[in-house]
Image 1: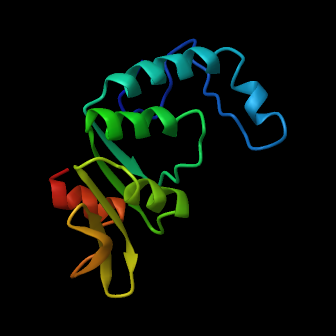
Image 2: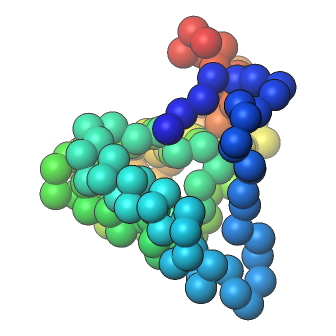
Length: 140
């Protein structure tokens, strides 16, 4: 289910979050998280493109399906973060497929990684990894 941006929740809906801690992994096996993860798995397994904002590729219940979709089915992926994690960079270097674009902060602007620039190239003139700038760039 997706909801439009709203300041009030519909009747009967209670927001939930899995907080960090020792029981985090176990809680994700209980409802409603189990159903949510199954739904996410279905979507990840069928997607033709991904936009990952601030995602570090450290969630073992999410990234294997995403990575497989990019590697095997050549799904396009955009990854934007202030600082790309080592895990994100390893994924990009070792099989993100042919259609990837990654953006991270650089003192002179934005470091951009793609198939033609796997070690990155600096693009001056903006912090394109930042969500407000990225939204403006793509017309949101």
